[in-house]
Length: 240
Image (cartoon, rainbow, N blue to C red; front, side, top):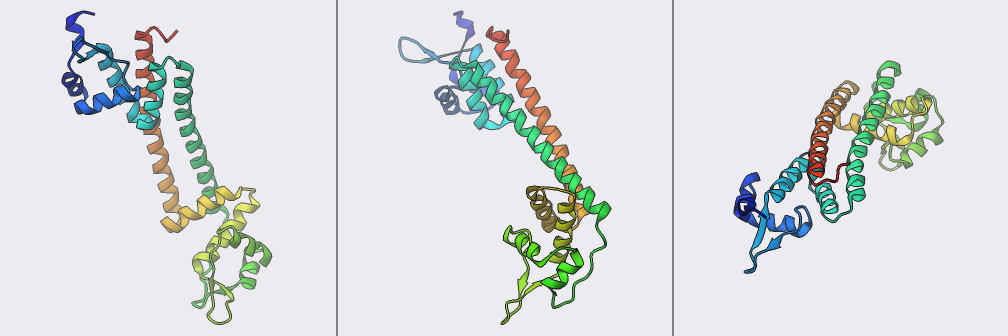
């Protein structure tokens, strides 16, 4: 090993702006390659460690530190298939998130295009029988949706009768509409959760579009991290 190839721990840490202790931690976790020591016990870092540290930081920008540690430890432990599996898992995770957003967006488009205008509920609320008539389902169906925590009607004092305010009446209409469109309960639950937090389908649609854009940015970051890992593997002779 050429002496000019050697780096002090403090110099290695400075390349990415971390502490010397973090460098030692990365060695212990396998994020950096194994480190040789001098006869007096000092760690010998090289440009290979600097490359690994740069790659790890780039991976972490897209995949997060937990997955990055898993990937880099597998690479330095000689288990490239495990490293690639962890990498693929990160990209598959984004694909699932993207598909979920699109399913929920599709459900909202159904709500916006097909649902009738929301009917204002009386101040005292609407009883379950009237809601069933308005929505076009049986009262037993409304109770089932309540058991699934999709509906949250109030109760009258004393009699404990179910009463639906305007928001819950709207929720019942949305559930009925989406069930007629064969949407699964998990999508309906996501739709209702968004509606309750944002207040309107239009605002939810805008919020989901924003999340889709964020997902696009995260996807590009993961791609850059994967590209950096490929270059690192190529230098190590493991990319063929």
